[in-house]
Image 1: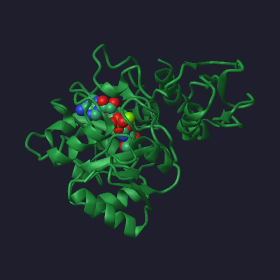
Image 2: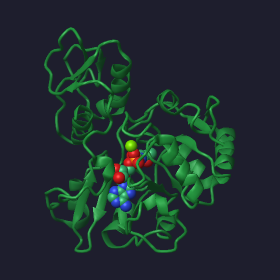
Image 3: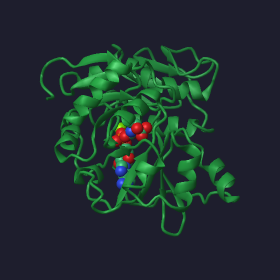
Image 4: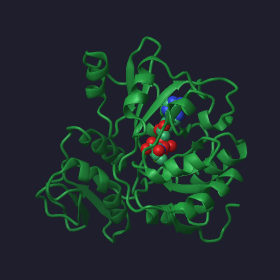
Length: 317
Ligand code: TXA
Ligand code: MG
């Protein structure tokens, strides 16, 4: 199915969703908007379909995929969704939280989805187009971000076609993504400990206090790279990136924040939610510009600022 021909982009209306569902049922690849970034979806129960994702992205096969589901009930077919995980799913789903949970054996997921791990990453997304698509499919959807592996994530349909044109079967367009950075990934350990594997739009500290009445233990997920997407050299714009820049040299494309005059501002008013939503669009613009280097103004670490700075550090690595 995925051929050399240009990939068509269609509106994510009822007709587009129905066409996408047919392509997915037949084992094809469809880029679909979520509230975080555009995902590259394939049916998660087919080895062949999932293999196409890795092939189209050039993704290393040791890097597992997130399985997207309609709701907690569908998630529970594939993983043990209990205790805190069940509370979190009830509270946050549909939304930008991915839970890494003990996988159920023989639940019908393609082996490549979990890359041999005993766990599976599950998320019920909130975007109406993705929800409509999941409702139209009688299988869950494996979906990494819809970009060539290691490059900048897409928050607009044009970003997807610039990266994957001719390698996938269809792009559903619903305009820019609202959140702009990928979902928060949380693993819940056997002892009940919460390990944030990737910072994102969801404030885990607030949720921990709310649900468990105690502050979340701090500390990182430990030495091993458990979410290989966390490798340093991710989100690379293909040029040197300098962080915490107050001003730019003449050969630098400056990404600004707040009052800093810039080529592309994350948020002129200094709003972090707006900055997250615009982050990848500014990085795409910087990558396309004639200037050989990129400089980025400081972004506060508060709230979703932590996720923005996490992505910027990886872009600079
Ligand atoms: O917002 C998002 O999460 C987007 C949209 C499309 O849903 N998806 C996304 O997928 O960011 P991707 O493939 O770019 O990132 C998935 C991350 C990777 O870092 C991967 O290593 C990690 O999830 N991951 C997947 N399964 C895992 C598992 N069983 N244990 C630990 N990490 C896992
Ligand atoms: Mg990605």
